[in-house]
Length: 125
Image 1 (tube, rainbow, N blue to C red):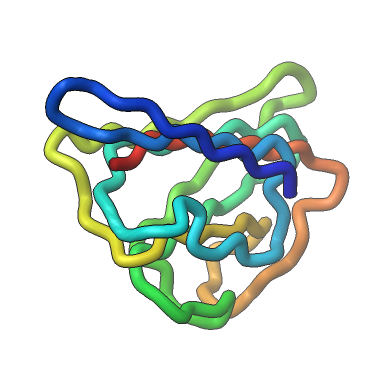
Image 2 (cartoon, rainbow, N blue to C red):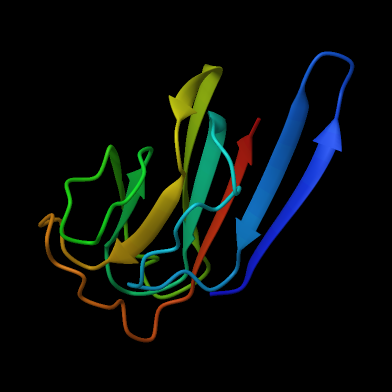
């Protein structure tokens, strides 16, 4: 995990942008440190395996819990990266924002995406 969270303000909202340049099969919990709204999440897959980003919007979750959002990101086909982006203009409320990635769709499976570089970016308030 190489998580960075940065805050910035506009006239009407305070936002937080986060990036994790080494997402793995271990839960990254309470990313922003507080509740808020999720406006955008982007996941990059730099590997040859399909990956599943499992995202949680509630507190006290483990890798065995059903995710609130599950994104399937295709393999890169041998070069470059494949990016999936979810934009939520009105925002999606969360108590704690947490996530991890695996190579299987099953809820309770936390199989690592070996040899795969996965990056995640997001915007919250």
